[in-house]
Image 1 (cartoon, one colour):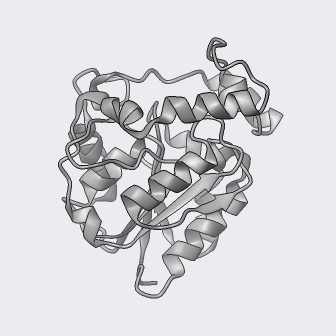
Image 2: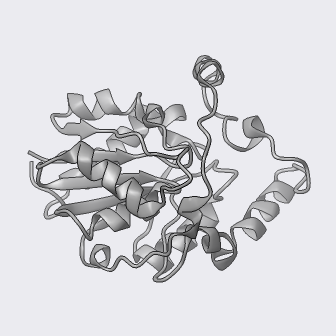
Length: 234
């Protein structure tokens, strides 16, 4: 049976996926959502991959779904385990030899975000606001829970880990992006998806944190990728 492994983004907190996990399980798949050692200054992408592999154990037929920074861990996993499909979600799709610290300038993310801010009437030079950038479309009760839990610290070490993975280029890929993402604007994600994954993204009416704002729609999009002929077995 297919096992879907859900990789969180910065902060490494599996709680990000807590609304998606049961929706995928209801569709009949095994689902694993591991925490990553984000607060460990000695842990880079290889150590993140180690943490996922420990959680997966000896399971086979693995689908990896990766949010944002999790894309770098996803491609590293494809070097080490039998991954049948990778689905990138609002993700930092990497290029060969690139670190996640270099990704921002290499992709033009900052310019894309500034342009969207200007177009939608936000001050592109305003201080970072987590509500305006990440949580603007997340239901209030979920936002309250997130603030009660507090932020998990994110070490800078993973941003130094260069992407050396190549195996992922030979397996099926999918991309999901939010049409209201203020961090990775949709046109930016469409370009990144075409250039780096060779596919058109599936668009969901959501911001950057799709698993919190549109969990049912996201689960449905993931399920559609997993169910594609040749993508993964049942």
